[in-house]
Length: 418
Image 1: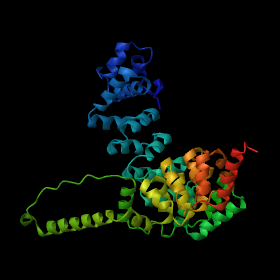
Image 2 (image 1 turned 120 degrees about the horizontal axis):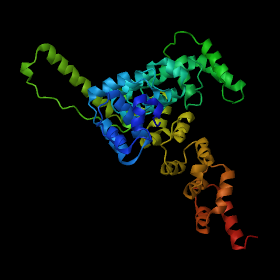
Image 3 (image 1 turned 90 degrees about the vertical axis):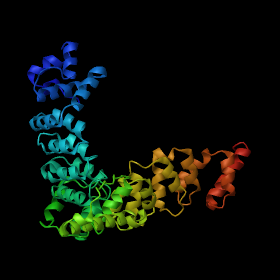
Image 4 (image 1 turned 90 degrees about the horizontal axis):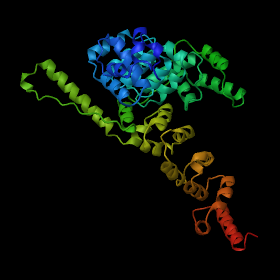
């Protein structure tokens, strides 16, 4: 978001606005004018978000060169939403600064939503704790859900807040499973009944609110996290390919330690060994320990190796979540099309996706797949070259119907299309 001129103190507008002299604007960009830090930051934010070239570069450098203590004071004094939006996007990688902006009630909901997609777990918890903001801005639930750093416990808590407030959340993959893990099977059955009554249409806000009103005040633990916290942390670290730097410890003479310090040191070593053992588990073993909601979320935010395992999951909703991942690539779709054991629903979903099925290579793989619907096969096979048709007509890996169809098309072409 570009910071508007109206967001700046009135006395500063004539110095940085479009009509201000170019040398004056450059002096502000280089932080050479004697003005209060908060006013200076406002001017720099305006130039950095509205200008380009040397003026923008100078403003950004001046912001980066501000001492930490000065920045903290500035962030404590900012009240304008546009400046807070700019500050959050600029300092999102600094947990100390970002936390101040997230806790500021004047920070725009859209900026918090943007941050919720990418901040670490500690800041996710700060965002999740603001229930009023979540209820006011439903997209925050989805942003927290799709952030790989969000612990599943926080995801479930945010879902619970959203459901109780009657927010529209059922479009999020795995909503029903997460709903059941929080509120139990009986409440989930009511949700299914409401969906059936609407004949497959999306639940409206009144229906969701009615269901939420019928829920008990206290929610029992229905097993939303059967996986240990340590295992889940290790799984998410592997699935998102994050690497942690090992802490360098100073060598300490054991003889100089007190008995209490020695016990604390030994306990710390045991914790490290336990965490190391969890991280060394094969990925498929970690995934097997996950609940269905965890698997769905991992399918959406995990890496390629995780998707290759989850596409074969016995729960169709988990496998379908893989296809909904924004990170899935065409070469992965090709490998899925080669797997004859995949569900026919998965193959049909791939065939129906226009972005994937427009690829000639994927079309050829789907033609050869025994579970591809005949309508797609009959249409695509007529676009193949004679060599590809001959290969199909001789292949033992395709169905008899497809073999006969390939032979008929070859004969038609050889006879001039008669």
